[in-house]
Image 1: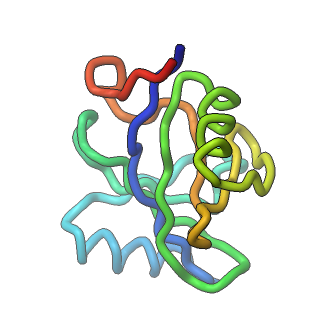
Image 2: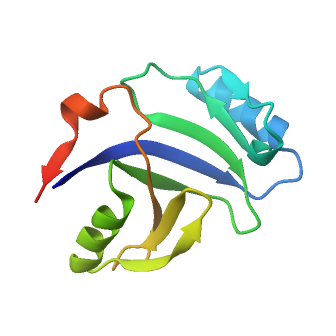
Length: 126
């Protein structure tokens, strides 16, 4: 048994200026940007939301700009297998998550819990 739910949205930006991209999305959505001091997180800027709200961040990427969603889970492998049984395809691991592709072509990620309400509101799967 494991749990999962929609974690939030990642705004993928093909850009040389992540700070400018984050400033735009911060102003557009009315959310404060929070950049990590960790060099391993240099390609990401978190847009601050309430702990129970959707997780939103801006990410510098090498592919065309788009928005993708994250599904959070307490068991990544179990959730990946559940989604594969529904027709999704595993693209591969990245850092601490797995990139997948829906049968309809959209890419998304399966990540560890991000939201403060995970334990109380996530779906429970057998």
